[in-house]
Image 1 (cartoon, one colour):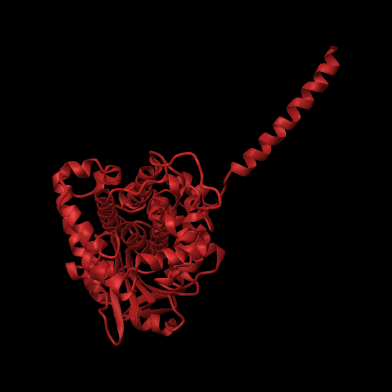
Image 2: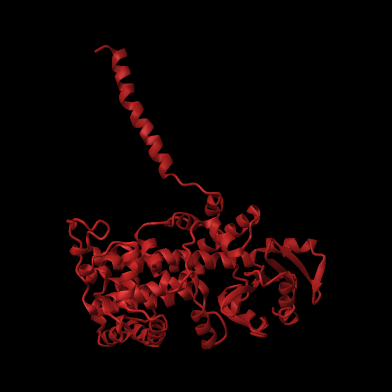
Length: 295
Length: 172
């Protein structure tokens, strides 16, 4: 088994590339994400409870719930970690040894090859589907109707909304441009089961994607992506987002030279573990919400 | 080289190695007040956190209050023995509503022994800073929690009475 849940939450970084890249997206959803770290700190912040004995009691229940395999929390963690690891591996495969002088933080950019648009599109779609599957592992399928379920999914806030913002910006806008949702959907529509089988991100998480075989899973991915495309397009237009704006804001936190902008996507793939970071935060929050209610 | 001097030089070499090992281990070691519960709840014989006898979370949905008076009630979680809804006002989460089956964790019932008031005939207690709970049919815990200063203890009590508690008591 991997580390205990409380240790994962205690050891979430407070700085470094992931946190800096996410902070750069604050302009999209101002004040929504505050990088909540530390297990007891999460309990106090989520519940507003301060009595140490009560906090410990909530924590004990949260740990017990997480450790019960049948509750789905471990599968959700695995999904968040695996989808992050797989896309990092894809970027790292193109990483060579030398650094560019004068560009300290993003010095390795020149050694990263941008992913082909088809691979990037499948990546985006698989990550989006992973989000839906992880949501269900953590929260079940809340409510009595499809409408209830969609209302629940649409109520994203905090770190979950930040994860979706990062997905749209880092895996959509930057690598695929302003029309990324339509572009990605058409690539995904045109993909074959074998395209999917060759995608690292898909390979990582395929066993938890609904569908009997690659062809069934591709169908599920197409359907899910098609139904969330509208949400992504609305999000981009409501927030007036462009790739340039995202890169401009990233520049405030990390050093990027304009002529290297095409390498920002692969760089983020390797060094920004936003999916796992915010995934652990979401998982911790939901566990705590359940634990405090049950004790 | 005599054995005494050999021992001295041996110590000179070993001492710094031991010292750096100690430093290394203390830097790596992580301990937490949750280590005990971690040990109790992992491994082959660990007890399940949720009882097989617990009601399906979906069976609780019908007893929750619906959106009203400017408050949106949005489903949040539904797992075995547990269902939870958010109460949002103008897009801000102001409270949480939940029902859980204490079959999984009977300890949760103990606090109701000191209850001094009731809602619809069921014992009610306040917990910590932000929680008010009722115990229905000596089995189902119904909880309302504040998540915003605008939602006070009186609001928790009011929302507790909006649940269909008598209906819930019939759930077998």
